Image (cartoon, rainbow, N blue to C red; front, top):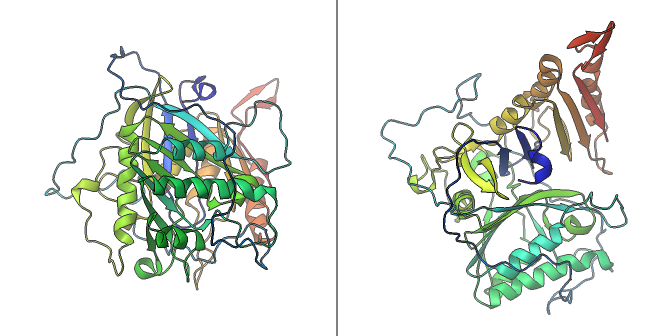
Length: 441
């Protein structure tokens, strides 16, 4: 865990989008332990140092850089899935017990030495911050993952637009996306097995069509209309060689590297977590089979031992840490896998001082159904944190040209609780440390 997060007894990081679709959440909680650490033989892979030098950004042959579309960031038009039955007991965060006939979960892949943990950020070009405040870039870590790939690269993705073939006259900010795509092609040409699970779009995506036509990658597409009546695959992660992985908000889009604020985590030499993440990918890969139906139950090989009740204790940057991976929706969860919603609620409920949230949209309601309904689970958790436990909540929402004005009413409603939060204590008749909700756009 990054040293800055280890100053207190318990700290956490959440990289999440809470408004729609399917995504994978990774929850890291650093804990102090009095147990003596046993030194074990390392099983690390030799990894070249992180470098910001950019490889060639020449477009692959057969790719046109001209289009009449705008360069403004956009996402394919999709609809999130309708509510699905919870796998949790009503009103609790306790998973329902598995059927008594469920076979035991197979043992996990061990991590024999400390895992290397980093943040990865995308900051739009021409935005400047104080020296040291911006961590390693998404570009550099994606390039590093490609450089060290030897056997396999599995990518779970929403959509693809690394090449600037959707804009007319793309500028220098499109170059990193092209470089990433070229190096992905190079990995496929040197024999690395590449698998891509992507969200459905009519006609597909030019990037992955090219990779598949050149036999450089296997591609499967998930259409949630077929199973849930709507929804999207909103996950973005890379899993390399069963050893290294990235999980974050960045799409496979050149704009996510240079024009949009993104945050993720990258972990190297961590087979125990990488192989658990692989189980989530295998669910997507299975559901990407043409005409695939939702199974009545998932095979035991995709079950996990690790969740909020029993996290995986690993060394992250030589610090003892408790980690689990969550996913959604419930029909995609094999035995033991934590549900995203409950994982987010637990992070909020376990906060001691503050909850900081950065999201694209914040709406405690469904948006894309014929009859939308109020959906207050996360909104209620934030209100309870500020009112009941005197937590400071800071919420940062993005503002886009397409952002609906009605979103602001929900934000104002959340911030209005500041006028009513009780006081934790008084000093000279002055309220000290009341809970608070701060909202910025």
